[in-house]
Image 1 (cartoon, rainbow, N blue to C red):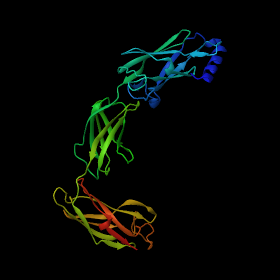
Image 2 (image 1 turned 45 degrees about the vertical axis):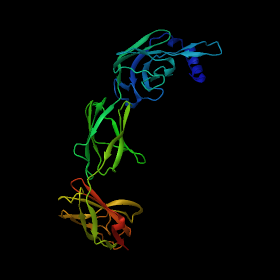
Image 3 (image 1 turned 90 degrees about the horizontal axis):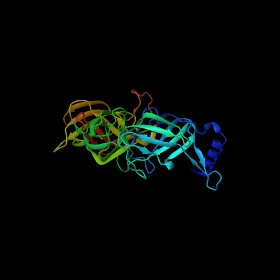
Length: 362
């Protein structure tokens, strides 16, 4: 304990005879990551080099000065012990006095220094003041193991234009509290998975968002009490592809919308157009934000055949409601040459690069 803190405690205890020798009262143990969860849950792994920081709430926690008349005064803090599947007493340097109603402790784990892996289960916690008196709180702490991932499956395969169900199997999942699940890939922002159900402590059902970029991702699961597990190279996102796309006409004026026909020349493993509604986008900027390239949806999309679609490029309207009455088309597409993205109802997708795409003329 640092000298200024020790000096303050020496003064506090020396001036308050009424607090010496009193019996403490332990009212609760809190994991700051889940303040409203009782009993507190803590993982027996992770936590960095010091373990997990927990808070002891109560009253009459009473430290006692030692060697007050020497050059090296110190303070003896209350003793904190756990009893349950194993018994454990916190080392003195893992305890921190804040005030008579609050103490903090760093609970060692498998990964801390020094390490200590408590068996999972329910623990009673006791606080004993240096001059006597003990308070014990039964079932104050639940020690849980970290999550584990054994397998990931995508039962229906990946779909570009819809969420793709993902099943995660393993151990140590928490049916009573939702974990944080994140896809990670170098050079890209983390992709959280928001829709999920913890079916049991061995199974989670979630979804990969539509249009997640293709590639191989690590997957990290973090339980609410803090412990996490990462499976590297866990998931490779790939979509079925449409054939080679072309557009006709290949240009249109900026002051009026243009009806186009997209042709899909499929061969080999590539897919033809499927009947149903297609999502077709022109990748371009609009005049209201010319520095930002966005996916602008085409309208009046019509399935003609397995090889052709008809749709209207909103050269003039952009994202604005139609009809546009201002002849200057203030929300229209910035003149230039742009590519397309086409998402098929089957889950396949295709792209037409700007080099062979559609030109909005001034």
